[in-house]
Image (tube, rainbow, N blue to C red; front, side, top):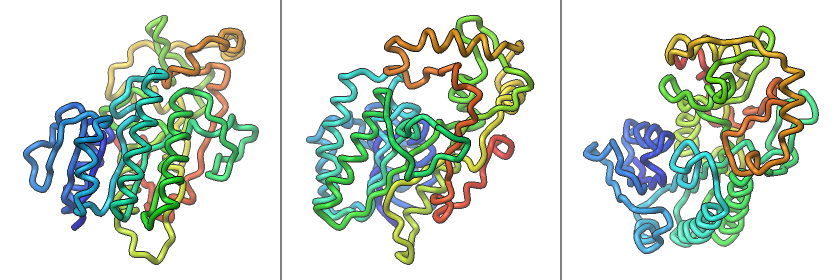
Length: 314
């Protein structure tokens, strides 16, 4: 049994991670600015506080009781809006500076942070993107997470803690479909759409693959030097037509039209000079929608099985 601090514990990812850790028999201390639906469960203690409040968070880190920290706060799909502002970037940078340093100084064994696959440079080939690929964070969110990775690496040099960076693809579950929906729905026209037969796809991460990976890290026996950067995503891309089927089955998608990709791509390329691609995490560049961008989770499969996908998540 371990004692683990989970930041951002009330968000979508935080709830699932916390619940899984409790089911494994761990003691969990959760913190978030919003109340947790898990309050009252055995072995769960919750502090409702903003992650920027160093005076409330640091004593938990310094208590000498923690085996691990799972830093999920300052993340979209967890507790940030999709539009990430310069102010939020600065606040999150300040959080990283005190949180990682305090955790390392306290001798906490494992520090696991949530990052994003948006960090990588645009794909230049059909090869899956691996952890060694070039980085070129363009959006505010990607830049924020890239800086957070560097801050963790800097802090780890001064102690014996092990750091794990999870570069997570957009997440989903049966009930949480926002990231899936964004790829096949035009909010302006209020209609779903596909190009051709929908045989193009995207890299996502089923929430249960993420949860399994976290549990895999926490149960390492020392035979594998697991610290480092990992792509955490489904093993295969999810086809657009499969998302449409999923949405029809579980989320009342409505009408789906066939659209001309060439026309949309040209319009998107001409309109891509504004601020939205930089600030909005959910911005979809239609000119790259059918590129089948894929991330390799081969390295992460040394830690967990990645057995979940859109089909068996149903």
